[in-house]
Image 1 (cartoon, rainbow, N blue to C red):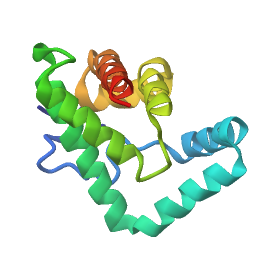
Image 2: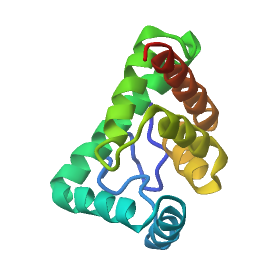
Image 3: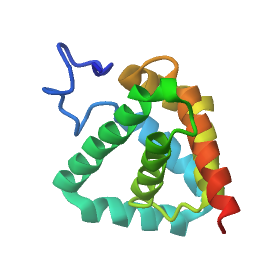
Image 4: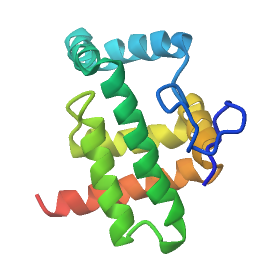
Length: 152
């Protein structure tokens, strides 16, 4: 699948995944302020420490992993949200998010809603994977969380 980033001629084989689909500095400042209001300063500071510890290479590796996970989800969308491979990727995505902050099942379900309801997140996901991806990703994450909740 071709990347929907703003970089010319991007087919993900030549994509600078370290910057593709990332939030602008203005968006980062806005989201940081919202996160402090919602989760508290210490949670945001802990998350920033994790990000800083990753370094540029670690962040680039995680961005590439985001594309890998979401590409599998996108490519298997016709199999539905309960598809075994789609759900495996949802688990990998949950682990991926935990690189940045401690994300339990309830928070992960909320993040799935945010991927589909936030204009900025939707725009980034649509640019990267296409117009149906935000809603599908929300459903995939919701199903994953429902199944995980049954097992605990």
